[in-house]
Structures are given as C-alpha cells and as structure tokens.
Length: 306
Image (tube, rainbow, N blue to C red; front, side, top):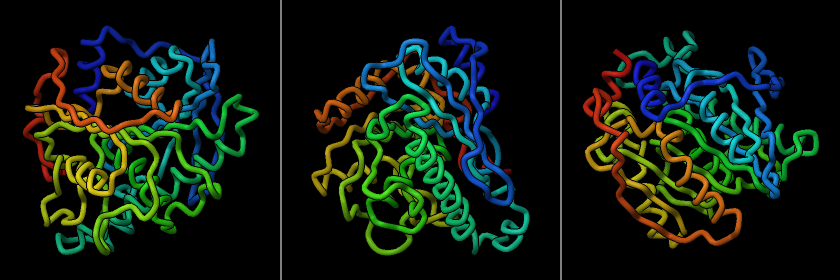
C-alpha cells in the first residue's frame, strides 16, 4: 500500500504540502489517542466536517500518513473542516495476537481488531460533536470516510449505531453521521442475518470488483466467513429499501482504497446531496484512466499479511 500511494498522488499531480494542523487528545486507552484538525481557509456555509480514517490492515498507518495529508488538503480546499484520527491497531497488540493465534481463531482476531477500532472511531465522533463550537462546525453535518481498514471501521461504526451495538456506545445519543463514504469497506456480522435494525446514514460504497484484500463480495471462510464487502452490503440496503450509492470499479482490486483524491468531485456530489436531504439510490460502474490495475488487483488478504 505504501508503495502504491505515492504513484497515485503523482498521477494526480498532488503533493503533500504543509498545512496548519491542530492536534488534540480525544480518548485515553492504554495510551492516549490523538486527532488532527485541518481547518479550511474558506469554510463551507453549512460548516460541514469530514472525519477521515487511514487504512493499513489494522497493523499499520496513522492519522498523518502519506494519504491522509493530501486527503485533508483536497477537502479543506473544498471548504470542509477535516479531522484525521488515530485508532488502535489490533494486529499490533502482541498479547491479543498470541491469544488468537492459529487459523481457527482468525475470525476472533478480526472481530477484536474491528471492535476496538469502532470504539475509537465512536470516541472521536463524540469528541468532535462535544467540541463543535470550538471547531466551528455543525455537529449534524459530520461525514465519516475511510480507506480499507478505515473504510471497514466507518461502515461498522454506523452499522453498530443503527443496531444499538455496544461498540458504538460512545456516540452521542440520537446522533448519526450525515453521510458515510467507505473506500473498499466491509461489514462484519457474526450473529444473525446481516441487516440494519434502524436506518443507516446515507452511504456511498466504492469498491474494486476484483478486490481480494477487502473482498468485494465476501471474505474467504478461513479469514472471516461473516465479513461482507460492498456488493453484499448494497444488496442488503436494496432489500431493505435503504437509499445508497454503490460505485463499482470493474477490473480493479484494492487500488480503490486509495482513491479519494481521485474521486473528490464524486465525493462532494454525494455529500452535498446527503446534506441537502436529497439522497437517492445509484448503482453504477466507473472507470478512470488514472486508476489502473497494479499488484493490488491480484493480491489477497493472506498475501497482505505474509
């Protein structure tokens, strides 16, 4: 992933330029977790805010990594206040990795990784809502977005909220995101049928149809038979008559996880509709001459961790 990101940024003509960043602690776990606030020079009149989560397979990455900076740059240029957060990386927890060692416990380990990431995302959302006046934002206009593991986390955070699950207990009561935009995300549902008990936030799913890292349809059973990619999530939303957008990229794999910089116009179009209360259902395939197959098209999740 780290080798791919600079190539994509170069193709887009982007550079990670210096920005004024405010860093704040937002929750105390075994150590303190921090978030970075990137303020726009010309804020949107609606004072919308984007909370962005990095990717890295729950083993690497951070709030100021080489993809988060250009994302913050592009979105602040569009008037958004951008908050890039850290969250705990379960696969760096040696005690838990040892506890769940072996293929038979792989599903339990993934559950742990996702659960703690969702807890931290929920805590960050609560901090941003509590400090909305200080940040100059409207707490009802907070968008969640993320890449890969971050995409799983933001999608799961809203799923847990909609289903009153304890992982999202830190979220403010009666609050929900204004929109959720996961780049190569998935939902983990190990108990019962995958379904939303109450409506999710307006959601735009973006996924490569050949993605085998975060599978487009469903993970291999040995990893997690209950981790469902964007294709399956969209089917559930359609079955429940939940408005959503799904953008499918044929012939492309996990490269989509890094594609927010290349799809910022699409991101803004969806978010603007969601903020205006005009969200509809859209199912589309997309190609982009600057989004081409790389080794990430054939890579699997098993390859990622080897």
